[in-house]
Image (cartoon, rainbow, N blue to C red):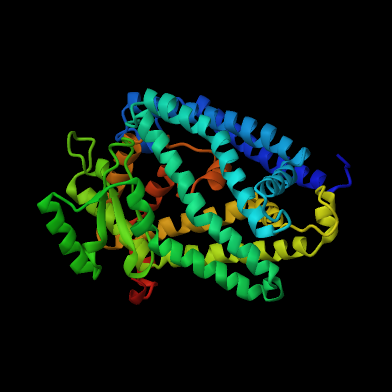
Length: 443
């Protein structure tokens, strides 16, 4: 490789970012190894044996993440950049199109084959690690409920959806750029934003049912409490759905997804289990729902969407600079005048959307919104119940409560358990004083 080439600088940046991530993961690995006692704030909540099990689970997960980072991202990813894999695959796609006796110079056709090759390649590269995580790590700690047939069916379904939905979008972008969309970058930005908005709005209706079955809440007492809660908070509780997750995993979770009237709060059925004292009580389930309603009331999904559009705008700016630079493509090993749109898009995405600074900022925004949702729950009298629910969920999922602050800022969308408990522990008078400063219409 010519060390003055574009590929060299891409490789340097790629390795720089991945070695930072490796360093952060190593720091957290040391935390797992050195934190042998339950934090003082959790001694009364978490038994020693549960804490030790969560420490072991977290340590093994992190070791797997480190191995994957070294193998997939640093070694294989570095080799891909060094040997120009994207260029090789693009030329291979041209050959395939020509062999099919089609026009090998038609960029849309070549892009279609190129995307299919990328999807299959990523499937082959990622599936072994996902298989190991599911059937070795998760199985060891009692979380996995998947059969091999179910696992492979889901992976193939994911691949199928990529082919059906993402491939036409990418080919549409290629056509748009080729007919002059880069002369009107705001129009291209608007097209991408509208597509993403519609996709996120319809995701819970069209995509999620392909992977999971949904049902209405069967517990009539809890259902009545939820309806009362919805009336109190002026929220339609018809969009609360229970996801049948036990066939996949024993992990518990709840989240809000979708936009406008298509938004819904999703509860894992594992969260509703009441087989032991470690499971959530109705009041604690309601506290989690109030937290999720807090996201809805604060328009967090829309704020997150706008933040992603800002990143998209930066991406399109970088893409535009790359696409109009003929020397950029020549340095990638392509014939002069050959400027594949998708190659420039993929490289621009790796520089912007995979940038460690972008991730830190988006994570910081997400964590801020989690605090606001916790604040909403506490404002409506569910602070103690939410605290209990957070601890119980942490125990059920074997989530280790202690994290290196830089690691957490990079990899966590939510504050750590200790951070959230500290926030909920604020003196009521001080907390309510802050509430008084916030206009009621925000809630």
